[in-house]
Image 1 (cartoon, rainbow, N blue to C red):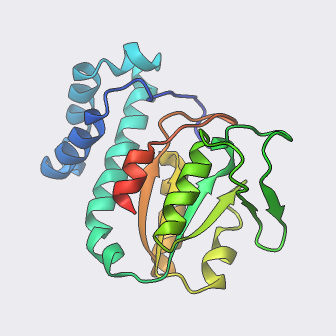
Image 2 (tube, rainbow, N blue to C red):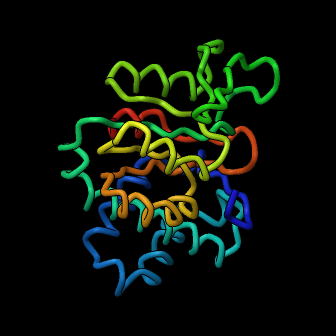
Length: 204
């Protein structure tokens, strides 16, 4: 959890993220980012909905705008990639105790989903991705990502993470020449993190 603050965007209207991507791409983010962020924060009442102070809200929104812009830039290259991986955070599992039947494979290292809870978003993501021939890795941290992506010479990868983690991983993926798409967490923390299955499905 790299951010020093926690957030929950799960109550923010879904079209916020579509407009965020469109606005950030069309406005020339790097020259108008602060003005755009303030406008978006006011328009969608981000402070009120999330409880974040203005500074943290700006950091979060700027990261989300960068993430969406990079997704747009990388999209064609990603669509041309053949062998792809999906990287999921283990903290999005419904249960983080023995009720979760996922098995941890120390050789990868990654959890292997056992599909024990139908309403677990990791289970849902794993099922959808495997139907589309993705290799799925449920990770307890980011340090194992280079080993995983090198293991099978992946050309494309989708990572589900908070914006701060995406910023840390982008240079690595660029150096490995892996076309990436990022799905932002809507709620961060050490447990019960949330991401949009709908967004993931469209990205896959």
